[in-house]
Every structure is written in structure tokens, then in C-alpha cells.
Image (cartoon, rainbow, N blue to C red; front, side, top):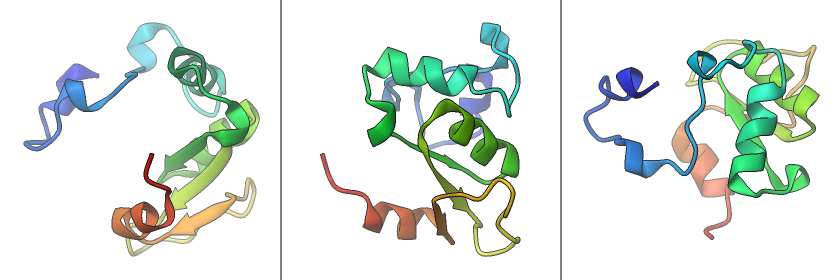
Length: 102
């Protein structure tokens, strides 16, 4: 996962409280195991957790993990209907404007 972060000039490991990937031994999405582990590591309440993704596998994993889901279209694409996300956003900016600042 840390290799992937090198693709982004403005994102560093310290920006995250938990980083999980398939290399950590989790089954790939749509398995809920990685999402559940992230929730556990963060000490979060699944009912107050939002899984954001741009693929139906992200929505499925989040739904199966018992968290709310948001599908990010990035301005194109059709959101999945099965599984259906709780929210649909066209951009990160739109998503950020809807989240409470903690």
C-alpha cells in the first residue's frame, strides 16, 4: 500500500490513521474483512462509519461490513444499483462538503 502512496505528491502515510491492503492478508473486496479491520483499528462505531469507493466492490464490501456507503462517480459512470450505496457523490469536494468537521 505504501508503494501506491508514492503515486500521489500531496498524500503521505501520516495522512492516514489506518492503512490496510490485500498484502496484509485480507480477502479482496467484496469481502468485508478489510473494512471491519479498519473500523476495529480506528475504534470506530460501524454505524457511524462511511466507506467511500468508486467501484461496486467497494459498496458491496462496505454494505457487508455493516457500514454506510458512498459511491464516488468522479463525474462519470453509473452508480451501482445492486448493491446500492447509501449516498452518491460526483466529486471528493462534494463529499467533503457533506461531512461534518470533527
